[in-house]
Each structure stands twice: as C-alpha cells, then as structure tokens.
Length: 213
Image 1 (tube, rainbow, N blue to C red):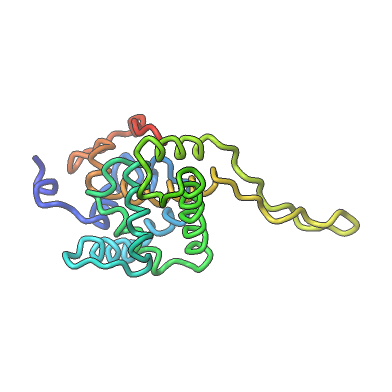
Image 2: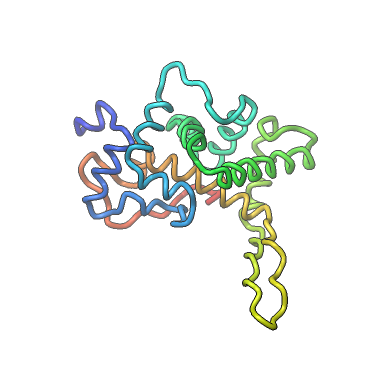
C-alpha cells in the first residue's frame, strides 16, 4: 500500500496530486461546473481549512444546527454511501460558513424540501423515516422533472419577462447531490473508489453504482 494511503491524505494534497494527472481534480461525477461545490474545490486554501475543521476531534457544526446536521448526514449516506465515514457532512458545514447568502439559502431550501416530503409522507422528520421510505422519496425526487429557468430579459416592445424560475423537488435533489458528491469524491475514500491508488488514477471514471445517482 502507498505511504499516502497508509497515513491518510488531506483533500488539498489529494486535489493537487490529481490536478497533474490523467484525471482533473474537479471532474467529479455528478458535479456540475456551475454548482457551488465546484467553485469551492478550486480554492486550495478553502479546501484545506474546511478539511481540517471536518476532521477535528472536537468537531462542532459552525453553520448547520444539530437537527440539520443529522438530516444532512442521513441524506448523504443514502445518496452516496460512505459519506458518513468520509465526514462529508462536516466538510459541507465548513464550506457553507464561507459561502454566499444565495448558496446558503439554496442549500437550506433544498434541505427543507426533503424535510417537508418526510412530514407529508409519514408525519416524521427525514432522519426518522424508514430506509424504504427514504429510498422511495429519493427515487421520486431524482426522476421528477426539473424546474423552468428564469425567463429572458424584457426587450423593447416585447413581452415582459417570464416569472421567476420554478424550482421542483428535482432541483432540490440536484442541489444536495452536488454538495454531497463533491464532498465525498474529493475525499480519500471517494477518490479511492474512483480508482486512485496513491499515485495512479484511471483516465475515465468507472460507472457509479449508487442507486440514487
């Protein structure tokens, strides 16, 4: 086993290693270039600071409250198994602290949407749903139709712009999936799953086997 694997490697060093290899450090599966996580992973200092906070022995959330932390953790483990061990929730919390109000709001709205689904489905918070109910709702969300984008700006003599974008549960799912997959696949366990061996990376990512992707 590589020395890097035996002692562990931080996200910053991992992304630096991959940046010069066959696979781009930011070409992570399911992560769209416009997603906030993609921008975060370009910033080495931010990644390093968030990674250190996520791995702290006495970790406490800095942005999310205790209920939200547990909800994210349960969602993350269902969307990308292994997220709990990779401390994806802790990493996300550290990045949310330094993100824009717009991105913070979008994250909380997405989280709230799934909490609302759980209440409507079983009169319970998401973290208290059965595995079967969680999988059923995630499947429904991931296969729903996406919302409509904002309308074009008004032009002289033309019609007024369309209404603001309609956001559906599919959009909320994509928001959370981007945060979760970015956190997981930028970690050592995630990169090892994609084929990283300490100094070698596949030139193509293998197909993701997680059912909710």
